[in-house]
Length: 266
Image (cartoon, rainbow, N blue to C red):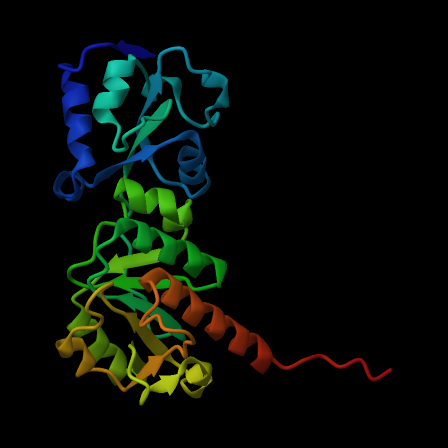
């Protein structure tokens, strides 16, 4: 195990660059801050290149699969330098990003996100997707980074277990239309179908748009139809993560209701 106490150390300087999305994309690496995320990485077979451990922390809590040669004991100043969060944890891992292919035509429900810019919203959507059995997520232009610290923390490890890919959304939706998918835009127009009619589409891509402005006109033009969530009270809209969660839960509920039941006639 190596020990580093200087913020001028080259490894520290290069690691600190991963706080920024551009550098994460360039290097194909990201930071996981905290022991819980590190365990989620190990369970999901992500490659951990280096694990920084705050001086004095209990090494026995680390997963046994992390080779000791990859552990760096770091001073508090170093941990604060490389931490992507305001209050650094005792453990920070440098991990390799997994490349994932867009979902194929066998999937019956795909969630597409357009210009979701709040990392906490994105992480919450991913966490809900896993909870409701949605495996395939595509992110169009303008979406924030799934490996941003706030997104990772909000997702609670779901990021590592879903099939998530960045796509040119117009091209992706056009291709899915050719393969028999309904492209469903979400919005506030009460002339849209209500969410309880999701079952009318066997294969579907459901699009959640930007937190403030919704789905762009360009994407709207590619939609088969629109869908909205009926609301009561005076609020005009729902948070993007909440709306996505309701739609995914409704999809799961409808699928469960349509499954044939085994009746015991004895």
